Amino acid sequence: MDIAKLAELGIRNLHEVFGRGARGETLARGFCSDEALVHVRKAGITNVVDLRTADHNARLSARCAAVGLGYDHIPIDASSTSPDVLQAGLSRLFEIVDGGGFYISCQQGLHRTDIALALYYFYHDDGEIPEMVGHRTKGCLRCDDIMRRVNTMRPFFPGIPEAAFVERRRRFLSRNREFVQDAVLGAGDCVKSAINMSYRH
Image (tube, rainbow, N blue to C red):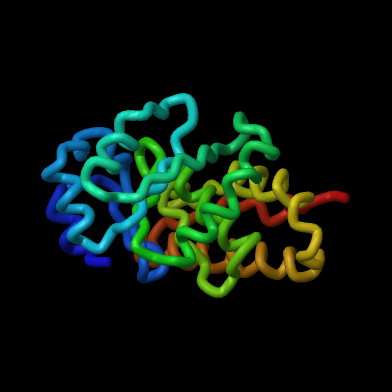
């Protein structure tokens, strides 16, 4: 996956993910031409993951199919989508991210994309901690909605011991504090986290 080649398109909020995929704004907005999507494919993207919910339409799916790109609509948001509906798509999300060559986005490639990657970390692979780039405001990490969604999905993963879940949360919040500090070079940093939010049986 060639992030520099993707960047040539001028995609906003573009970031590499786990060294094997990318995130950014939806390709449905300005990048739906055959020329643009072929460029995406040539950058090493094989699957487009569309996280949009009420703002989703079928246009991007059709355009991806036309140029040989895989497309999956996996609706994810902070609270509106029911946990049952969200759970139905998570196994496919995990499979795609594991395989690499993916482009994952909501409308702006920020908040819902953060939530999707947080769910991947908490409930599938806690090896590498994703950076929550959409939840930084003026040097502050605002992740209450991420942790609320993570907590609503906790009952679907009873195989993860509570101690392991708590440790994952500690590592996730600690590392994202560091990401924020790195982004603002340690100047005027403040962190508002959901460290006290925990799943209650």
